[in-house]
Length: 133
Image (tube, rainbow, N blue to C red; front, side):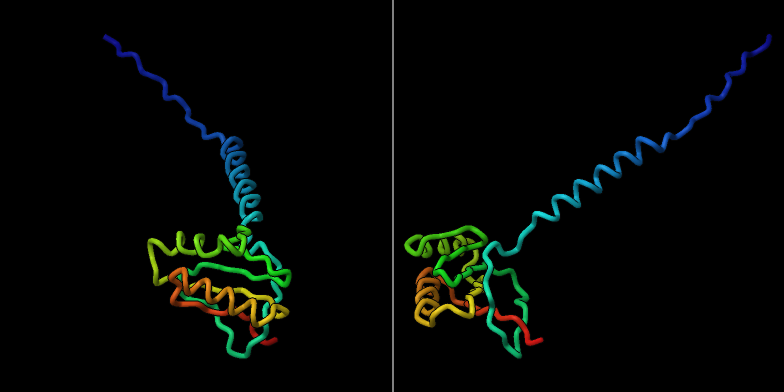
């Protein structure tokens, strides 16, 4: 009685499809990382010798020279600023608010925005500045 021997199938790993998938993933991540914009408003920050970046998670509020305000990259009217900040501060009232104000903004407008932020419940307000060169 003779037993039939099974022939071993040669397994071969095709690399071409694997390289194609890796290349497509690389392109996807490169393209999506280009569109991540931390701040959508062009603000000319004032210069400070002691400027530091905030350590905790912050809420970004920007005040441009033309008195336009953005909160977290979305344009907000002056009348809707308080409600928008209150809704963001709802889960964590101890969050730091980073106020990015242009160097050309009047002090009166800056204080008006700070008053609205405090009225909305913001207790930790930091003025953003860029370090000296």
